[in-house]
Amino acid sequence: MQTIIISVFFTIISYKLFRKAAGSMALSRLNIISVIFYLNLIGMCYIGLTLARIGVENYALRKAEIESLNKAYWSVSYVLLIMPLSMIFYQKYLFKGNIKLKLESFYSSNLIPLQSKLDSAQLFFWSLMTIIITFAALYSFSFLPKLPIIAILTNASSSTIGHLRFTAKFGFSGNVYLRNLLFLNIAPLISFIAYGYKRIYKKNIKIKLWFYYTLFLAFLAVTFDGEKAPLLVYIVTLAIVKSIIDGGITKKQMIILSILGSGVIMLLYALIDKNITVFSLYGGIGSRLLMVPSAGLVNTFEIFPSQHAFLHGASLPGWMIAPFGMEHERSARVVMGIINPEGIIAETAGVQNSIYIAEAFANFGLIGLLISPLIVGFVIQFIYNLILSRPKSPVYVAVFAVFFFKFPVMGGFVDFIWNIGWIMLLFIIVLSISTRKNIKILTQDL
Image (cartoon, rainbow, N blue to C red; front, side, top):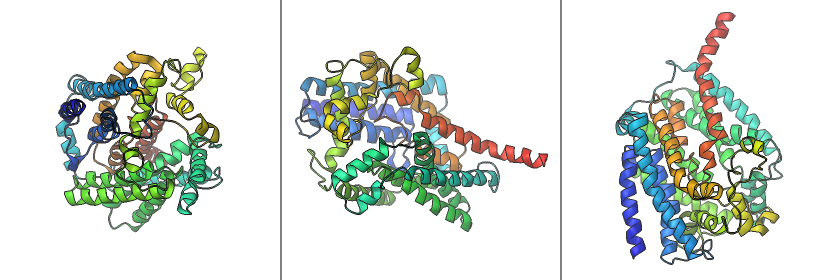
């Protein structure tokens, strides 16, 4: 009972702090920060650690030591307080402005073209990007012996699906930058942008057809490696794009989306894991959503530094650490290699991700754990302010919605320091904005 009371206390205080940092925590007007709080920190981390601490059994945590479990629990409690406090500080002294008014203005504004009445330069650029993404998709699929989604739909065995998923994600023999940066990351974004233009130019048949085609490309991208989460995230993000354009989401729409999302994830579990157990917290869907994501943090505390020395920054990009004679090594891969070496050998297991403080601790020890929420809080608050200060156009609405799930809170701390996906996204957005000017220059030269 004591653990439950403490967890409720931390959750309430954290909620109030995050509400101040975000400007709103309303479900009808979701934002980047509220999703991080509800989904990542509470839903996928704190609830699971609380349940484990009061004795609820789970297959991923069944061998966890009490000391490691307690460290994980109190570490996340620390994050729930320090992270939003740092974000409030940054908002007040660095970014300025009333964040609540910025969010309300973005939601309540009308969707408008970005550069001109017909936005022909933007439409030209993103149509050209659609062609490039098509070739990137063909290139990516050419390196797979069989598509994981085909194996899933044809009711292949779990081991076959697992091997195909591993090959698609970790055993890809082609250029991973072409696959990740162009196809997997940009295809969903373009479909959200196309949806925005479809809403502006409702009578334009070409734009409607363009949207439906990008929807198909996005589906191929989010099902590329056969994982369950990306498809669900895509459906929810598309609904969020719609809600931002509409100025919010109604209770009826929220219920429909919840039912649809639950149905999709149950179907995927039935097809991939051959398991539709919903309420079991030991295994099944409830377990995977609430308890398993926190196992990586618990295991990190058990493994570092008693079974494996701290990585001392080895998880940083190779180009950063090569001058120091270090080899790149992600902590989530190290953890999986120790807890499931058979899966690594059989190529059915990849990494065991968890909340970002796991990688921060594995690399930099206690200092990394204590400082990482301050760094992550800065990055999130900076991007949040940056997007909300832009006009409500299809491009920025799409970017805003994508970042609802783009932050690797349940991933790696290093990705907040150097993220090639974000850099590529920024580059493409800047390129799209400069298209109109470049076209004018070219036409004048002619």
